[in-house]
Image (tube, rainbow, N blue to C red):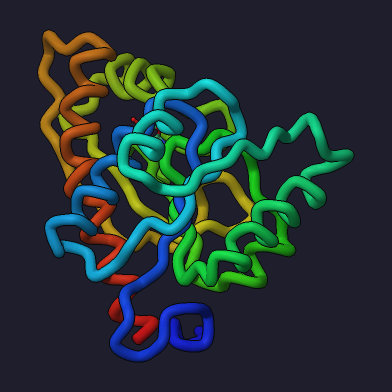
Length: 208
Ligand code: GRF
């Protein structure tokens, strides 16, 4: 794993984080807040959304963080789309890329450029309830249908398979018999907001 000094921040400098989003961006906010409070020794240097008009972009603007839209439809294939994200991340001397509700797949080119340094958060205890098509309320519905007693969230390193990379950390929550998918989603999301900053710290320490 390359040292984070070689990627962007020099020794004694903070970790430079690029966050990829597609929606509301509450995890983005938790990362920004953790940087602000000193829980993460880092800074969000760039926010990239694949969709225009999402609330995550407003959050970035409110924090004075540079943000842009990279629309998958503007590229011939996933490689071209990933290449552009990689170019922007490198331009910002990014050390760690965090997928926070980002719904597009990244290809080998960017994964190779940032080995072990691209993270994703998933709202279930992987390897259960992951994979293609498992996102949003679908995950929580499936957990409830199977009458699981617990669920939670997982932060993992991104590889080329959906939700299959090495797990950095997991946090559990109880599932109540009376839960609606929305109620369970909310309980899991609260844990996500603690888990992502912790996972970033684990990876940051490895890079130093
Ligand atoms: C979270 O539940 C995350 O686990 C999943 O997408 C959701 C994003 O929420 N990957 P937000 O945009 O961070 O609020």
